[in-house]
Length: 421
Ligand SMILES: *[C@@H]1O[C@H](CO)[C@@H](O)[C@H](O)[C@H]1NC(C)=O
Image (cartoon, rainbow, N blue to C red; front, side):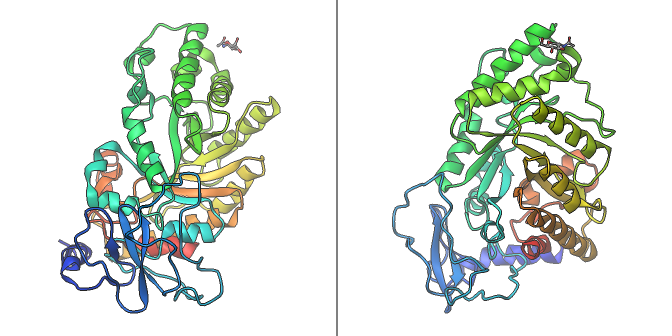
């Protein structure tokens, strides 16, 4: 057991015994058995039904922990005074904020993202995690997260496992969590080469029959969530790393026009959802980013609806591409918004203080690049904790990619994100 894990464990078990919660500590919420009062100089502020937190200062809340909250899904989450605002409202002043390493929550990633002009800071989650109460308490804290992405339950294999038979229970559960918390939802995804049911990958298709099946999928799934989601990753990962189109069943059968057809069907199904094309290895300039620029330019020239480019951001500690800000600005110059949609920064295990410090810097670099580009609307981490990261199962020997450790304690990476804002 390393130091960090030890610290987090002690903090987690020590909290309920204390008479008062520390600054940034939890002080209420469903299932919370710890202290409900805060140390001097801080105030217990209601965040959502699952979470209240001790925030610096006294001149804050309009809602107290005992009041019944009214969910307001489309409104901005209640926050305390923004850190950049002058005045005496909070104790944060102008000093750079930092979180306590090992604590469950800190000054608030979503709060600081919004103060920096972004719409949200968010996290992916997945249905098996929804029963983990300490995990959900942090995910539901709108100081930390203003947005949620379902990791798997809106994908094709989950929503249409048999042709024209749709199941929405998994996706609905995550949408309802987000709505209950007052968080926006990035819906993910409609057309992708992976996690397809076998009836799609092994069907004998013609251009016309596959186009009809794809359009039917989109109109049913995006239609089910019509009016409920901020955006859709309408087309996911259409490119190979060299910038050529990925030769999946859609490209091979329909040709490049499957992308335009998918976007048009998604717009028809949910006219208010922003439509994104989402891909990885497009963080910095290069062949794949150029291909994305060419595709979006061509779609716009044809009048095809396209509102955003999703930059996944599955990165490696110490190996960030250069020119991230310049690349995001080049995307934005096409007249679309940009988002970092799946950020995590993995390392070869075991993690060391040096790797964690480099990871902190790397998170700061990515966040600062988004902040510097006004069309970069938000940042989503691909789950907030190493407990549920996809990395160890996908990249052998690698992990520790998230800003919270596997015990739900804050890592140095969190402070890199804050510093980036
Ligand atoms: C499939 O049909 C569409 C619509 O008619 C057409 O634009 C496209 O070129 C066709 N693809 C192929 C591979 O023939």
